[in-house]
Image 1: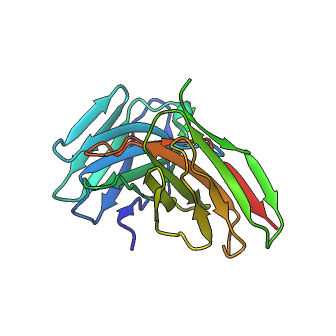
Image 2: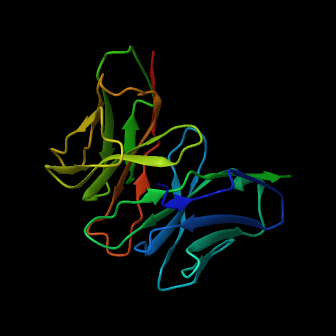
Amino acid sequence: DQQVKQNSPSLSVQEGRISILNCDYTNSMFDYFLWYKKYPAEGPTFLISISSIKDKNEDGRFTVFLNKSAKHLSLHIVPSQPGDSAVYFCAASADGANSKLTFGKGITLSVRP
Amino acid sequence: DGGITQSPKYLFRKEGQNVTLSCEQNLNHDAMYWYRQDPGQGLRLIYYSQIVNDFQKGDIAEGYSVSREKKESFPLTVTSAQKNPTAFYLCASSIAPPGTSGRQYFGPGTRLTVT
């Protein structure tokens, strides 16, 4: 039972264009969402997060949008750069006694020069 | 320079042998976690610990064991009972209690190959 779903395994975009990475979740208790970026053979690094009290959070070229009613979030990268090529994981947590994160399977983003 | 270290980067073992993966953090975080990543899969939680001398099973704990004797250290033992031990293992830590901040910091990972 996958509670965090990243249904598109890969995405290819041209340098300078927008990359839109999607994520859906099923658990209505999730109230905090994160995006991590991962290069091969390295640990994930935190990219951006959003709390359920917001519908948008922006940090430089990265913006995350949250649609609670649709249980959907998306990461926008604009403009995309070749160095953005990596695997992007969506993760979610529910407020409470622990901070277990539930991860999606990841999306491989390729930015073409 | 604060962070999480995992050693070694690559580890090879024969089937039937137990192996212990190291994870150390100097971030003064209370909570620590172990995940494994397989090709085409997300990160799956093996064990986590919110405080010293306490830990809980994650989603795929069978065949693994952990200890948390010190705040800085959370070693993971992959036992011979783990049916598919070859994987990329990631250790993480976070500030607890989490509230609405679920951010975890990850180590560089250990690639374990069992033949």
